[in-house]
Image 1 (spheres, rainbow, N blue to C red):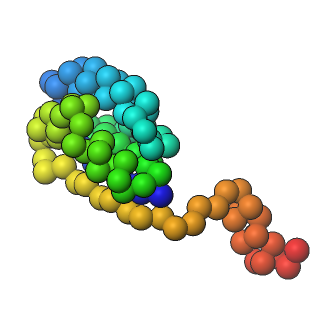
Image 2 (cartoon, one colour):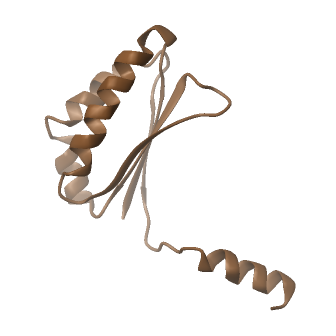
Length: 111
C-alpha cells in the first residue's frame, strides 16, 4: 500500500476556492483505479493548514493518478499554498486494526 500525505497552507482569502477544488478533486480521486481512500483534514492548531491523505493499492496506480488530468487540480491547490507544500509518500507493508491496541494493552497489563 502507498500512503500520500500532503500538507498545504491555505491563505484565508483563498479558503473557499480551495475547499471547492478539494471537493471536486476528492470525488474524482476516489473513483480512480487503485484508490483506497482520499480525504482532506484541517489541522487543529493551525486552521489555515489542510492535510490530504490518500491510500493507494500500488505505486503503478498512484503514478497513473499523478499523471492524470484530475491531479492537475491538486497541483493548482499546491500553488495556492502560502508556504512550500509538504509531500510525503510512504510504502506500508502491513496494516493492523484495533487488535493492535488489544495486543499492546494485554502485554502491558498481563492479560
